[in-house]
Image (cartoon, rainbow, N blue to C red):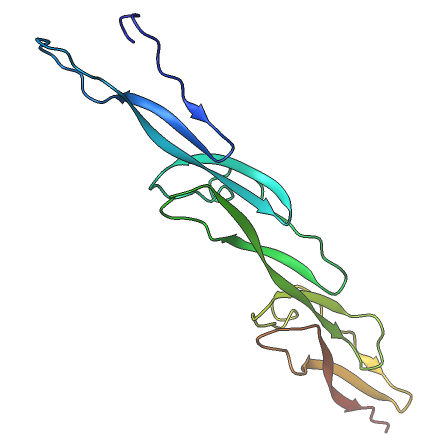
Length: 193
């Protein structure tokens, strides 16, 4: 090939694999008889990455090597999945990402459910004071303490009671569905002299 006597053998490419020419079987240095020299190929397999039914990335990897995570490698953006007002999704990785590639492989994005935890100032409130999105099986936490939102405002009742926010009741742990949390208040009475 280097001498220009023969051409480089062509790679064989299909949808699922590539036989890539990498050299010759053995090149004699002291020729004193006929030698049969054959091309040597390495197999590369197609790894196709899907998010839902959409192909988002494809590349080829040598047999026996590990497939890469194209998100971690910075080759593609993090896959997304359309959610609703009551359920969102977060990408958690790739299913069946091969570490020892032996064939063409389709790899699918895995998404975890993300549920709303709605914090209400009162049990009669129809609009949440704050909405926190928590990945399934994770724990919700107090958004006032972390500074994500302010405490509900004090309430003055008709009976001249002042209700001052003290905490949230039953902040859920191991969230597996939509949750409602309500504010709890300390009560102070107006003193008249």
